[in-house]
Amino acid sequence: MLKKIFTIITIIFFSLSFSNFIFAGNIGDSNYQKKNSIFLENLPGLENLESETKTAFKEGGNTAKPLRMYINWIIKTSVILGSMLAVALIIYGGIKYMTSVAFTGKTEGKEYLTNALGGLIFLIGGYIIFIQINPNILKLNFNAAAAAINIEVSDQYLNMGEAEEPDLSSVNAGDITEGSVTFNPSSIKPTLQEVLAVAEINTPLRFAHFMAQSDHESAGFTLLTERYHSCTSAKRTWPKRISQINNVCSNCSGKIDCGRKIFNAVYGNRMGNGSPSTGDGNKYRGRGILQATGKSEYSYITRQYSKYFHTSKDFIKNPDLLGQPEDGIRSGVLIWIQKGGNAKADRGATRSAVEAVTKAINGGQNGIENRWKLFQKYCKEVNCN
Image (cartoon, rainbow, N blue to C red; front, side, top):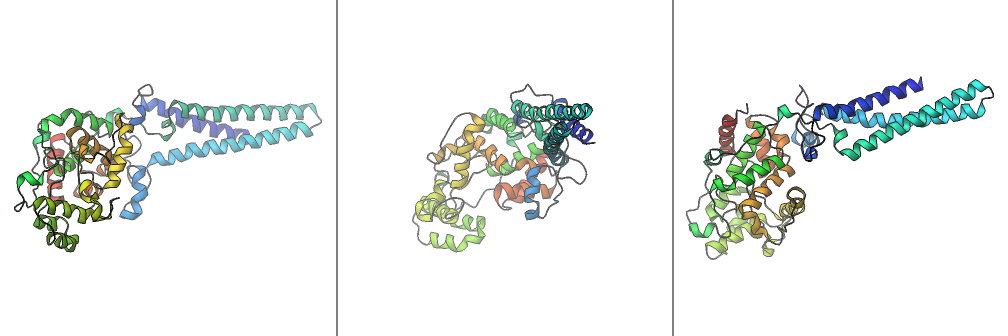
């Protein structure tokens, strides 16, 4: 009986493991580990990704797990149970061999020992081999080619926005963009095309969500550094921090000085920044296509940059680099990955999905009407419904 159970568990393990070879079709691809297109995901009643379940209780969402997570559990459990049964068979066979006087008893005990040792080596050896080939192989992150597409970024997509402008009536145009770079949207196409692949933004739905957020945050793909605010626009942008802004505006001199102190006040003592007196708020203000904000996010981008782009840069020491087109766009995709953008985008082409993505990227719902309008435009262009 034990031998039969052990055999069944071993068959389950190898059947599920080999199914990844069958469906993935990209084992020899050097980018395999970066491809996580959804295969056993969008079934009724199941959430899209593992990351969804981690925050489901916080967000009040559905806590159901995707089928892939249950299969992963079955694989790991089969290895553990199979190993335990193999050890049990070894002990049982050893006792039978040592205590049996009859030749048939010793033969049976020896058979138990041989089968159990062979099965244990086969099971654990197979597991180790799979892990060595690819650490993600046993996670069943199927690469379903039919679910992924290669979206080509066109000039049309980079000129669709109608980004909302803050009230800058009391600030000179030359002042508000100090330290930032304006650019032609067409010039960012190669880098933008690159980051879509890096972040697995490979479905029309993900593309529409990412482009809508990026369009809004970068003022229609024209600006990569957060502009200095007038006192009026600052109060509208941060209504919960009006008292801090009033204190700054009553004690600052000049438009640039006020703009810097507003950032230091509203961003100080949070997001990894020091107190307003350190100047961190202004130094690490919003930059990049998704407006990375705060010293913590700049530090995260610094750590992750070499992992995805194979070169090292220190954005803590050189924060203005994120205001340049290439690094600004690359930083955006790292923020998208960090915030779980794909998981939230996969929720659908709905207002609630846009609000979920906006909450992740923005921390609130600032500019939600414009983001929703932009999403609808991009969704229509790529047919994401």
